[in-house]
Structures are given as C-alpha cells and as structure tokens.
Image (cartoon, rainbow, N blue to C red; front, side, top):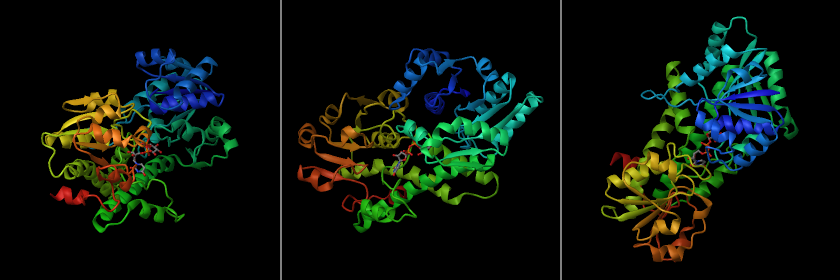
Length: 448
Ligand code: UDX
C-alpha cells in the first residue's frame, strides 16, 4: 500500500514509521523544511523510545521517506492520513482546525486515483463532514472517501500502542474505503487487534469519550486521595480494592499531581465545547477539567505546607518536569503550575529532568537553575519535590540525598517511595493520599 502522512509531528511520525515497519510504502510530509532535512539525516525531533531505530531502519530499507512536497506522493497514494496539530484555540478551548482544513485543500488539489483521506488528528465531531465538503467543492470529479481513524497512542509507549493496540476504530460507511483501511491494518490482524467499524461521527466522538473517561478516572482517584488524607486511609489500597473489580479495572487509578500532556487537557476542553454547542453540556467532564486545574495549583501549596507553611527565601529542588516519564513533553505539565506557585511564594527553584529540560527552558517563567542530575539538584535545597516518576528517581541513594540537602524534606507527588523507608532515613516525608501527609485537599486550598 502507498501511504502518505501529512504532518510529521508526534502522531504522523510514529504512525508513518510503524506503517512502514508493516511493509507499506510511506511518505511523511511536513511544511517545515528544517524538520524534513533533519529526518532525512535520521535525526528525530521528538523523544520517543524506539522511534529513532524504527525510522532509520525503515528509511534504510527504502520504505519510509520524507519530503516537503505534498502533491507528488498524494497523487499516487492509496491512503492519505491527516496528522497535523489541532491545538486548543485561544479563548474558547475549541480545537483549532485550520491546519486540518488547509491540509484538506492541498490534498484535494493533488488527488489522482481513488484515495482514502483519513483524519488521524483528534478532531471534533463533524470535522470529517467538513473535510469531505472542502475536497468535494475543490474537486467535484475526484474519487475519494473521508474516514476517521483516531489514534490512541500514549507518549513514551507509542510504538507499542501502535503495534499492539487495544482496538482500531475505523469510521466510515463507504465499503471501498473500509476495504482500503482493512488492507492498511491487515498486518495487525495477526495480533488479533479488534477492529471496530463505525460511522465517521461515532469514531470521532469515541476518541474524545475515551480520553475524557480516562481523565475522569484519574481525577476521581485524585479526589479520593484528598479524602484519604483527611480520614487516614491509603489511596493505593483503595485503588487496588476498586481496580480488582473487573467492571472498574486497575489502570489509570494512580493518584498524583493531576493529569497533563498534549491530549487530556486539550481533548476534555474540546469535548466540553462541542457538548455545549449541541445543547447537551458534558457536566461531568466540565467538573473534571476544573478539578484538575485546581489540583495542579494546589500541589504548590502542598509543598509549602510540607515546608512548615512558608518557602520564602528557601530553595526547592524539583525532580522531574515533564508531564510523565519517557517523554520530553512539557505541555500542561503539573510542574509548570507547581514551580510558578512556589516562585510566587518566594522560593528559589533548582530543577532536573532527564529529557525535558530543553523544552522546560522554553516554557518555564522566572529564574530556574537547571542541574545535571538528581543529586546536584538537591544540593543545599530546603525541600525536594518528585513531580514526575522517572525510573532514575525510584532508587535514589537517600542517605546521600539527606546529606546533600540543607533540610531533609521530601514531597513525593507520585508515591514512588514508601513512607517508613524514607522517614527511617531521617526525612520529613509527604505523599499523595496515603493517610499521613498534611491534609491539604485541592478544594480546601482553592477555597483558602
Ligand atoms: C493519552 C492517552 O492515554 C492516549 O490514549 C491518547 O491518545 C493521548 O492521551 P498521554 O497523554 O501520552 O496519552 O499520556 P497518559 O499515559 O495517558 O497520561 C496522561 C496524564 O495522566 C499524565 O499526566 C499522567 O501522569 C496522568 N496519569 C495517568 C495519572 O495521573 N494517573 C494515572 O493513573 C494515569
């Protein structure tokens, strides 16, 4: 199959490399010349485990190529995937579809034989209809179909998610397009990945519903964590007790500083906006988004409380900046709110992240001292906060950390340590929802 990925960002690149690895002939297109030039040299602009090797080996095998020229490859393609960005529109939170529509117009002009145009970017319900209208208007005689095929890739595990998906959702009622999509995904039939054929609008909504539900699950357990702190219960045991019920499932029940990233914050807002526009407000999702925002701010206050009520003039070491491990992505990371809150409260910040510091420098306001490793970061600090659960923070030499710090206060926002183990080493230790830390709930803080 000849496949074109329009947009060589995170989703386009991972999907393109994986399709090439299945044996398809893939061309990744992007407008940014420097990005394409780098990709041709085998340099990958994002951090994603396994991606560099996958891109290089498939490029060397001649199955994966990169270009800024959209028209040539599209004219010969069986399927053209639109994988451009859909950022939150400033002001209303609605997904900004201008890149999707611009790509649709360019694809329309270039169409040759029968082509399936696939929206892989996360797009609100009805976007596929608009893409179809745009293409039909520009090329009334062209043979094409527009299909929704949402991605469910987690950063840091994207290749695994692509190759061993829980399901593949294909939204089209066009039989010929269904056949092309079946051929595109045929290599996955061996792994018996369930393929769900739905209408286009159903597929578009399924993506938002899935992400909003996961965001809800996380927010639910985060609220339970606050309650655990008040009543002296342990949220990890509560989560386990809940998760062993098959109807609930144990995944996405880790309490923490609130969800971030490129998807959950953006997609929940877009779903809220769509639901409002259609006159059926998604009240649960509205609450989830609001509670999560409050929570991220509240984490700064939690650190202040653990430091005895003030961080003015103190140095706080922040371990982990990215929104989760195995990525360099800083988008909507809780670290942004936490660091801003601590700086506003008068703290000096030292920070270390294994992959995210370059991205962090671009988005973090105020002065931050960036360090080369965790030990350098905690040197002379009055408190240390674990914001991201990178593996290298899981087995720190706590004796060494304690001697390096000015005062041994550890705030573990990911519950990666056991309280007894850390307190035994002489630390003041605060965690999330394990019954012993200072009872500082998001709501109490927000009301304060
Ligand atoms: C998510 C979806 O999982 C993926 O299917 C979708 O296509 C894109 O959005 P991603 O944003 O890469 O993927 O990360 P994910 O692993 O889902 O984590 C999102 C956020 O939730 C992170 O901030 C993470 O720390 C947080 N989280 C996740 C929790 O706080 N607790 C959990 O139990 C799980």
